[in-house]
Length: 418
Image (cartoon, rainbow, N blue to C red; front, top):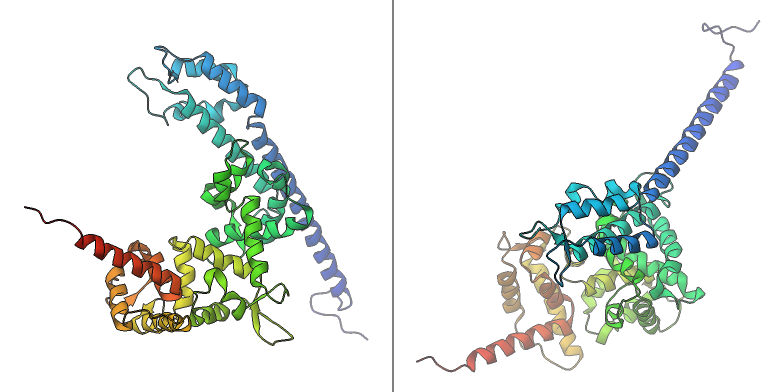
């Protein structure tokens, strides 16, 4: 006779009960997920209803000019009463978003209590664009946690491309590379812990997002495009540089290939640290470690924006050989000695002593600890970009040395005061 458990439930019934409970929990989870999706959709629809269409923005500008307050001058301005009339003439749904008293108070009124029409309109246009971007970004937040993963950022970029007039000429086969190039800048500046996800709030407030959205402008100049990381010409230049360095055309860069970057001034010690700290892949033929396009872009971003806290953090991670959170005098001497050797490779001389440059660097930074340079020290000294250049790149040190010599010469060329 089979013994019945004290609970009164047979052992045979336990798996079925557990399965039923699991099934119920699963159904509840699915229901909650569906309700969450519906709630997020309703929220996006509500937010979208508060934004202004292009036609409504044009209407706003016409109404502002029509209600310009006297005395009329070339710098058209509006007082609060006329501002309220514009609000009443606009769709009621946008009153709270653009026409509260607090919005008017954001601007500096003149002696007649008027604010600039142009300043208010530009603010409204920027806020409207920001609201539209918030809606776009939230639609890619699959798990509704307020962040976008690297993949979700790439999906957003690809969906955005058709809406950016400046990218009109992009060819299909380059879209994947453009996506990676664009997303890398967001991760570099907004993902310092390297979790491969970025909070949407930080995206909205970041100058990086504003730089990307500049490509929506129809009046953006060729000079502005030339300096915009997200422009098609800039992205194509970055990829062309990568292909030129990739001598064996295997899609990766070896240490030897990276050493040719921008004139070949990088020291072997610094390049070795890049391959020690960054993600690498083993080349099955040469058995050497190589970096991919993403790691290369991180390096380019660090060298391009060398004075930013994010870039200085990148460089310090590579220069901090001992993993102590900063640079000792020994670290500085090791890296600058490699710069001296780099001069010798080119048949030249650095014309300075390692210890003298070490002392000069500590004098430039003025760290809180006289013998230890931290990230905070590099940021606070305002010459952190110069310091990391001196320790990693022969050409950067040569530029610094010439600057010092020029300052010495100009200082000695003055006439004596009577």
